[in-house]
Image (cartoon, rainbow, N blue to C red; front, side, top):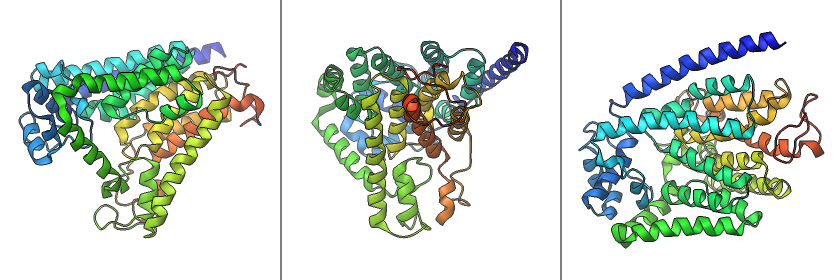
Length: 420
């Protein structure tokens, strides 16, 4: 059996190399083309350097004019992003726009390759699982979309990886500081804070709050009270936005609203116009999945897969999870692969492949052909992939004490890795 698997590994490495080169060439080419995403982040940072009032970032008409200085054909907004978001690209804002975007794109690509290598080696990925993982990465539609638009979610992935390192090695400073940075830059990782509370990781909570509050305090003289007030007003208005019903948002909230909340423009053909049900189902799904996650987390305190489950939970429960947000799913996919690689054709392995492909595939879930009525249940592939992987990540740490998913399912050790 060694020779066939060696041939498979060689073939997958060759395929991964070609796909990686194709992705890099496409990303470099697209960095010179107009696109929304990076331009709004760059504009915010550049305007901060120029001394513009941060409160005006929330004036859509004013900010879109500033964006047009760098991409005249692109309309983009600051939206409900934190006023501190502009701090993230301050060094790149010293460069001309197109040079900054190219540097950011190439750095993002290199960072993903390095981050997955680090995670895989730490988690124990071996053998043919390596080229399989990189083949998936270079086919990963969320990553491709992230690079196309120069989005920030490779940086978010890096902070997730640092938080995971702190979680698994019981380093509260690293865990808390990473989560604090996620919170104060992209309001990401919110589901990890209940986990820290449930597991009584008080030092990590202090570190996280300290970093978030510290960044806000240090930047306050430049940002000011009006900017924070404008942000809170924008964030408070976000949950009522009709756009959250669009299938572009692959989240539990979007699914519930798309099925049951009518809107003449955003959702003209729901399954049923039951607005109260939509507003009940969404929080029930969110808090129900959080409760289940916390029950498992209480029993497996430092499992890699518990952390993976909470990363996926953050994607499922965030009402604004677009395709490029799912770049963060590469961390739980790598951790799950490390756990099931010794039982390739078990039910757990098959579920991992299915969940990963649902997230990775470039499926037409925005198509008007599948968004009306009951057909809309087919318009949430990335959400379903995340839910499937979340359930698998919660199940595997308990597999040694519960009925197995399949006959080939091995036992799971304390770290979340399969032991036989």
